[in-house]
Amino acid sequence: MERRIRFRLNGEWVEVTVKPNELLLNVLREKFGLTGPKYACGIGECGACTVLVDGEPVLACLTLAVDVDGRDVVTIEGLARDGELHPLQKAFLEHGAIQCGYCIPGFIMVAKRLLEENPYPSEEEIREYIRGNICRCTGYVNIVKAIKAAAESLRAGSSSHT
Amino acid sequence: MVKTVVIKPKVDINKVNTHILPVDFEYYEPRTLRELVELLDKLGPSAKILAGGTDLLVQIKQRAVEPKYVVNIKKVRELDFIEDRGDYLAIGAVTRLRAIEKNSLIAEKFTALHEAVRAMAGVQIRNMATIGGNLCNASPAADTAPPLMVFDAELKIVGPGYEKVIPITQFFKGPKKTVLKYNEVLAEIRIPYPKPPTGSAFIKIARTAMDLAKVNVAVALRVDEDDYIRWIRVTLGSVAPTPVRARSVEEELIDKRFSEEIVRKASRLVVNDISPITDIRSTAEYRREVSKVIVRDALLIAYKRVRGV
Ligand SMILES: Cc1cc2nc3c(=O)[nH]c(=O)nc-3n(C[C@H](O)[C@H](O)[C@H](O)COP(=O)(O)OP(=O)(O)OC[C@H]3O[C@@H](n4cnc5c(N)ncnc54)[C@H](O)[C@@H]3O)c2cc1C
Ligand code: FES
Ligand code: FES
Image (cartoon, rainbow over all chains, first blue to last red; front, side, top):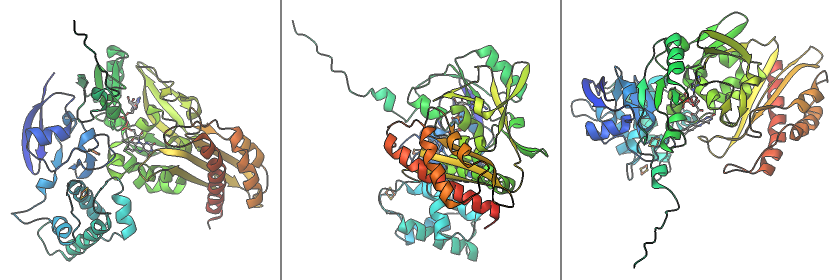
């Protein structure tokens, strides 16, 4: 039986009809054209599909779409403000933390929550927080550097992003 | 006549496609515990409870489970709490692992449970997964089981028109098997506060920070002023069909004076209590050997915590 659900997606209320067995990841990608969240393992191992639900990073590949009815969903597409990239996005670019890029939306969504919870993360705390995300290209070193740099620029409050 | 040869593929592609949930089901969202139990009773055994979904949805993707009905338990608000009730701490079954990890009372009084939860998966899964799901999934490797067992936790189970409280040691029946009937739910976990001074610790050996345990162990102990061990619990996971108490180790150490030497000797006895197998994560031999080592290490850490050093 199909269901009509309504949720906030990157700041705007949206409505969509879904079947109970439809996954949030597929609904975001196929019904809303948001291809930032990536499908990779499909079983929770890699973090490529990470989105924020009510502000917390979760895996869209293991979330039923019906389960976000009434809730707040943010994907990587929702981070830029007025055409300006989020400090995390800028830092990833500046530090060469992106190679093929497939894993990056997941890393950035997780890092966003990390920096809200902990504005002064140590390298160890960063590595601990991103352990649910796999990157096959970069070797993580530049990803960690980028998150550290973004933490600094967010602390300096040099941008309109919160 | 041409004979058609049907070549059967080695893997059934429908069982490895993890992109979709290849099963149609009806979906329910009860709001109260009572409604939940009545619904389960009505739907019968082909219904499955969905909590965080981090075990269940993976199993549906792999067609290990094909439920006709899925009952989302997360909207039952009365099952989401961490509450100090004087003699014991109560944790609602749908409490997320992340909330448990962040609770300072749990970190202080039930350190082994705090450490176990921190050692689980990545932050995304800990935001989704519930403690009830970890127990009800009944994996022999479930990380919250050993610490809850060392603290003598009890489980409140609710069925249609009744509720009961059982010791966690009676809950697991085998891999993926618990005592729960189709119309019963795990509602809450009760953990009695141990008498001070008690120390506890959890250690997990896994291939990566994200993986299930090859072996995990939780210990708790209390020593008197003269260093005699007056209460002790040792529980291991992933080395038997269910999490197991290492009674040989406990019996060897109770009422003995704590020393590294006797702990090392007693820890070797753990092999009498476990029956590990070889699987994709590890071998039986390795599990036996490393169990001795982590039992010893965990006991030494727990002792230091009793002494506050
Ligand atoms: C990548 C990855 C890493 C993981 N790492 C770990 C790890 O390190 N350690 C570990 O122990 N586990 C790990 N897991 C397994 C899983 O995340 C945990 O077992 C989790 O706690 C399950 O909780 P859930 O709420 O997601 O359960 P669900 O998947 O929603 O449910 C699990 C089972 O329990 C039943 N159920 C749930 N709640 C109740 C209830 N209240 N009453 C009756 N039945 C109920 C469901 O019907 C289902 O059969 C991992 C999983 C993944 C995908
Ligand atoms: S695609 Fe979701 S965790 Fe890998
Ligand atoms: S940049 Fe290619 S997987 Fe991370």
